Amino acid sequence: MLIECGGREFVDYIVDDPVRPNLFEDNFVRFSGNFRVYADVDVVKNKVLVNAMVCVAICPFIPQSEEQLQDYALGYMDKLLEDVKEIEKAHYGVTNINTIICPYSLWSYKKGAGRKLINELIEAIPILYPSVQKVITMSPPTKVAENFHLSNGARLLAANRTTINYEYSLPKSKIVIH
Image (cartoon, rainbow, N blue to C red):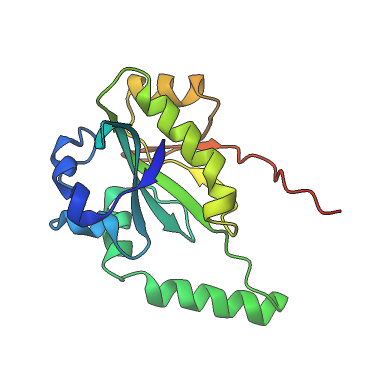
């Protein structure tokens, strides 16, 4: 079952992050602002058992480095993003900056749970975040990450200096209006 994690209850799990354990000085950043943590869990005898966790950023750009995520978390990009929005509005009459969900770290405690979690999250995005138009990872440039994402239906989008971006397709809306 997919759940959004609160920092108070789940911050201790961040030490298990094998991908980006030291991304932020304060691990609570992962739970605040435009950053979220989700888990796939089972509930057994009123106890929550965490099977896998994923950290995501909700961005108006495609993160290509840890430094960009850190700058975004600290608000260093706010002025630049506002300038881009103003230029687009002046030129086109609307702001057309995409909203992207960027999974940047994923780990599991149970075989197959990471795959299940990313699929659950992608299925839930149109409901949780109707304005999100894309799911693009910021993954490490490893064979394990490549095999995981490509075998899970993502496509290679871009190879960066220190990361790889993979894009997942969002499900089409299942809402029918009569």
